[in-house]
Image (cartoon, rainbow, N blue to C red; front, side, top):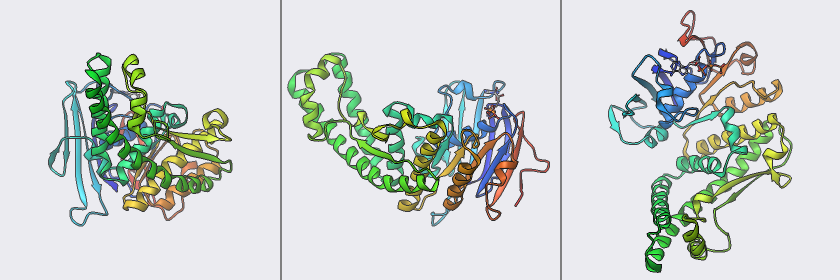
Length: 373
Ligand SMILES: Nc1ncnc2c1ncn2[C@@H]1O[C@H](COP(=O)(O)OP(=O)(O)OP(=O)(O)O)[C@@H](O)[C@H]1O
């Protein structure tokens, strides 16, 4: 998958910007506050329907405008027909949203995600190590979503069952053990399936992660282990039954796939407590790159990588290793930086590259965007 054309309107300080990105590396260069991250953010919104840095739409819509509109032509090398798929998303200040894929109205952002898998490496990515289990569950689920097509409907049904069970618990509406049994069985049925997909995925991810980490010249042993969200010696149904009184007292479900986690450890300790900031960045990069590699192996689909401020926390040697891994994956990459020179040297001459200069929300078209190689 790669973006052949990107139009951004009314998004942050980008009132109107058009890009024709290279299939390989796209460097987005500009001073602080120029609009570099906003370009990455726009691509991320096109992929997920959500921003990676704002929870509220008004923050994203240009202050002077009523709506933002994002449009892209996505090249899908795997499609037998219609290899270029136009996609678009717009949202106004009233919160009304429109998503279009290949000329048709789409109902959910998950349809965008399937077509445009995007991984973001930025300061938020550290949350994979220092954030709550929810962040790591989302990370695992992103991977499972892209390699197991049947996962998403099961996950959605599991979420719905959990929500309803919690609602009954919270408002004291669980009427007797027969109703409790019904909800336990419903949730446990989905839970076992979700667990199976996640466990199988993490098993495939571990070797990919280890080899990526060593390619990034990271020598310490980092272990990944999957915790499914309830005691591994019992079924989910038994765990729900065992916790029934506690759940009733607390008003929410304590065990289940919504408590799953991916434990990331060094010397049996949480990696975040042991590693330096630069080492943490390498581990986070290895996780995100490993996911892209695994998806490529299993489905043939390539992820697009958004890297905000690549030089941050990485010395030049490790930066070069990261670029080498991305180069070998032959995927499309968008990288922001305040200056271009050091970054250009990190890629081999054969990699297709375009440099975009951004200034006050405007893309410099003199001479760029130009393929400099
Ligand atoms: N809704 C909005 N409308 C207009 N401008 C906005 C809006 N939201 C943010 N901005 C401005 O857009 C600019 C672009 O921010 P962005 O984060 O993309 O810059 P950047 O080039 O990545 O900077 P840095 O190098 O400092 O990270 C900032 O000056 C910010 O104040």
